[in-house]
Amino acid sequence: MTFEPERKIGLPQFRAISHAISRYEDVTMLGHHLVESICISFEIKAASILLFDDREKQLFNVCSHGLSEEYNRVVPEFSDMFREFTQGRWVYFEDFANDSRVTNREAVKKEGIVSMLSVPIKRSDNILGLLKLYNSEHWILHDDDIMSVAVLAEQYGLVIENNGLQNFLNEVKVAMGSLPLRKLKGL
Image 1 (spheres, one colour):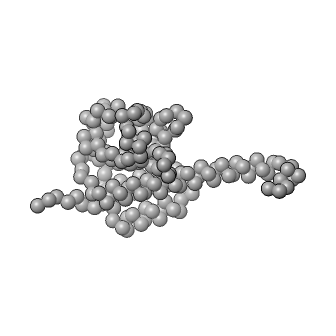
Image 2: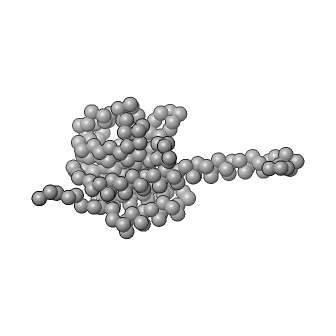
């Protein structure tokens, strides 16, 4: 008899989270609700969203659910060892506290994190950040759940990209509004 992991995100949960993603205009609020919904659906310890600053080459924790303030202050280091991030693939850490790729092992142990799934937040070929799911015990993930989380992360990436574009267009409108009318002819 083979063990089949239980699916945690069924169609109703996936539809509810996807619908919420498509409706939010506040990216930060959406992020908080996304990580909370994932924690509830998976019945896991915590989840967080880290966004990548390509100028500083660093990931910044923008929202989390279930993690201590102290753990959130630990700066996650970006290194070439995390090729999964730079290549846009998800990675599962079965024994997160003892994995050689983890730079802050003591903080992980203190937080009580045993396993972690890291899924890239993407927009097209651009990696915008990571959606991380933390568990206080070892857990076996259903392939469909991993794919569901990957799709939700991509949807979140689309919202981030659209929000950035909207902010840019608003700045252009303000700049255009200060131009003399004669300069706007033909635009």
